[in-house]
Amino acid sequence: EALADSGDVAVPAILRVVTSETAHYNSVDFAFTALALMLGEPRDPPISDSSRRAIEAAVMQRLRNFTSFTTLWKAIDVAPLVGSPKLMDALAELATSRTAVTSLGITEDVVVERTQARARSKVGLRR
Image (cartoon, rainbow, N blue to C red; front, side, top):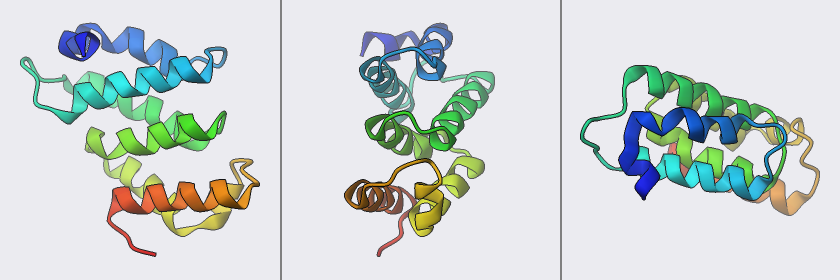
């Protein structure tokens, strides 16, 4: 919550973790939680447009480059909060295309199904 309250000042540090190729998935997941808190409620001052664009790029990176299913799910959770049509299109693709999910390297049926269900819930689609 303290990071979320820091607003734009905290965004670069949070995004360094989110986009890190070497950070442990738990650290990345916690960074996504901070972003969700930051974006989920109105803040004073609000998150700047430049921070939103940087967050959009970081979320898209995690939606397109699979490292762990929990991190992918956190990215799915944060994507709608950014307010980006590009992210919503990416979610819709994950929600409706099994191939989009399996092309990330996810092979376990249960993880594919849960990923698609999570994405569907964020874009308002039913099975």
